[in-house]
Length: 128
Image 1 (cartoon, rainbow, N blue to C red):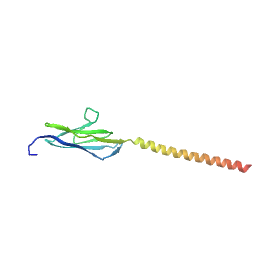
Image 2 (image 1 turned 45 degrees about the vertical axis):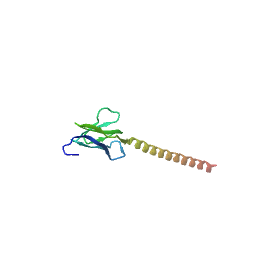
Image 3 (image 1 turned 45 degrees about the horizontal axis):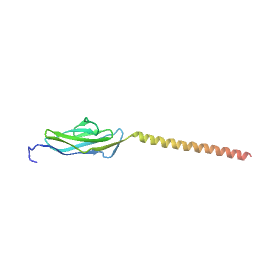
Image 4 (image 1 turned 30 degrees about the vertical axis):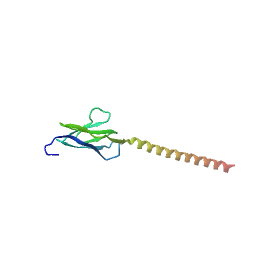
């Protein structure tokens, strides 16, 4: 590219940090990069939504979905491929923990009942 040459955005891509799944309440940072002259303005979109959800080089996603950026200058625009953000709910962990505690409590209760019944049977057996 020669100095002073004007170009529409090219090579538009999104990177994600941290990558992979995140927990509810945390956020993932999406970073848009592109090659253009003059520098491109960036808009962020969530798939299946017509209006933008953010602007600027980076965007913090707080919810699950597929997101992409669009780089645009006066010479044109280009959008990136979409990246998938997965937010795992903390409620799932709460439900699992509650299930484990309730299961343990049920087992302890059954052992106590069994122990009482065994004592009662032993007492009745020794009286006869």
